[in-house]
Image (cartoon, rainbow, N blue to C red):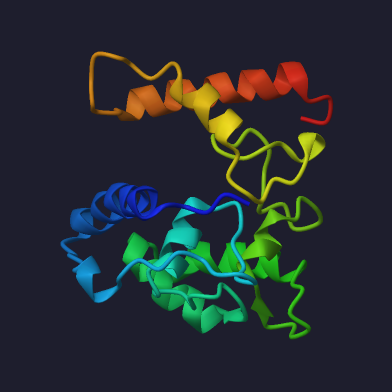
Length: 178
C-alpha cells in the first residue's frame, strides 16, 4: 500500500486544519506533532484526514484501538464537534476488528458494509466493486487531478464540487453497484 509521503501528509493537514480550525479562531502548531510515516503493521484507512492525524501522532500513530474519547479529542483538530464524530464512530464500530466492541482500527473504515462510513466515488480510493477501497489509489487520484484548472494553484470550492460530481458520474458509468 503506498503510504502518504511527508509532503502529501503536510498538504492534507495544511488543507484541512486551517479551513476548519481557523474559521473557529483555533490555531494549531503542527511542529508539536511531527510527521512519521506509517510503519509495518500500522493501520490506515480510506480517510486521508484520519490517516494524517495518525501520521502526526494526534491519533495513535499505529492507527489501532481508537476509542470514542480519542476520536473526539482528535476531531477538535479538524474543527468538528462531538455530534458528527459520535455518529460516524458508532457506525464504524459495527465493523471493528479489534476484539473490543468500543475500539476500532483505521483500516476498519475501509469496510464497505455494513456500516457505510466508506463510500464509493472517492476522489482517491477505488470503489469497493473495483477492489480494496482502503489504500490510496494513484490512478483514481490522477484521474481526478487531471482536470483541475491548469491556470491556478488554488482549488476553489466550486472546482472541488465539480470534480466530485465528475467522479460520481464516472462511478455511475463504470460501477454497476453504485
